[in-house]
Length: 598
Image (cartoon, rainbow, N blue to C red; front, top):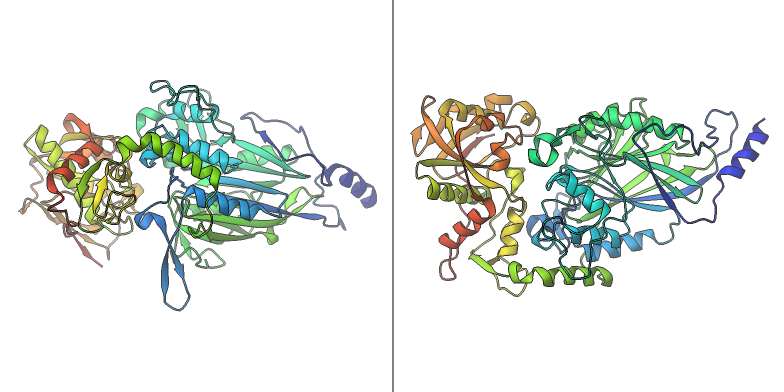
């Protein structure tokens, strides 16, 4: 019996001469079409394996040119208490690195776990991220799971990025050059139409590589609706990540595909942030939402490629059956790529779980640039240059942001800019609050081109605030303001605090030795040096994302007497022009508005 089964299995599963192909999954049950033998339970069945390689990135955010500041560096841990910052990233180098990694691997697939577009630099955002899609095509991307930022311009614009065609409002940017769309599928298994319950894109795809069939399922974090602009996701529902992955893993199994990789745009926080740090074998070195997702997701999933938190890790976390499973993330901005090597069992049509090995590799800038990517970047950079290269401010030092600390100089600068803008509309405005996730990179003193050190170009200012939010003015009582401060550290933000950046004159104390809402010492809050009056009404400026209750701040959506001002980027650019000059460059504001007790 075994011999007969083996002969039949060999006939069906040994490597074929055909080139790799991709098959998109449907939202309905596809039945048993293409069902292979898959013989995991036959005693004595030999193991006939081939090598399989998965290369992965996440959170590229359209970083076509080498990113600057902290967003363009990775930390290497030498293991002796010494760490080193390494410059990394840029698609010209990423292309070279991926092409080198694929050499000698006849079964290789390149994937991404969301946020390829959205929150992008000007070179991409100015053209609705068409340049990034073209770069991903050139990188030979095979599969991309969606992230929250894929919805920055709305879900219908995501479909245009998939299918191609000129922008419905801006048209084509070059005569006789129409945008052709993505050569790869965007997977959005848990993003469904409210009325039909069907995913807006294919939920999964099957990659067939010379006898090896691997299914890829793509999901974004269920909380996406809380962190994107509501206008762009009207009519959509975001489902539970675990339940969704389990559903489609079963569908893949019915189709004879036992090898499954999940692309999950949700992540965690390693104990050691260095890209080469070693996670504990039981996952103890990783915290955050992805840990629970990994512990609950069906054992049918062999590997999890994750993102969203912009962290670097390759961790082993037990699945519900108690077997170790790799969970990986490659930081952001194309600074790293993850290489996963494993054995694929041709008879069982499955990945040999114990063979899976993962490594994060630095995208070094001392390697040759890929010429085709250089031509692509230069093409779009030339189109953007008249706007991008305009000087808008002068600084005397780096003005940095860092979401791992409560308060930063750049966060305060952005809040001050929004307050100044608000006071130009209504001189009763007293407070501005800025969400840290809306600040994407540093203002760097070193020149990025030939503009000279200390010169801030429009492109560099845009990179700080690329979302085109508007400044909103609302009335909040002192009691509501206290509740907003509590929401920074409680509810959905308790596990990962989101500390709002305050404008000058708004101060409070944050006690990190406490937990939950108690971390905010409410009797410490002052406005203009005076204690906060819980009964008084204050005029407050926030961006449109926060004004809609985004980032877990529902109380901000209760603001009364709303007035919509200008674009937040314009507010920043205008403020920088007012507070700096070539003769008097701006120094980094002090980060002294939030007193932190540790």
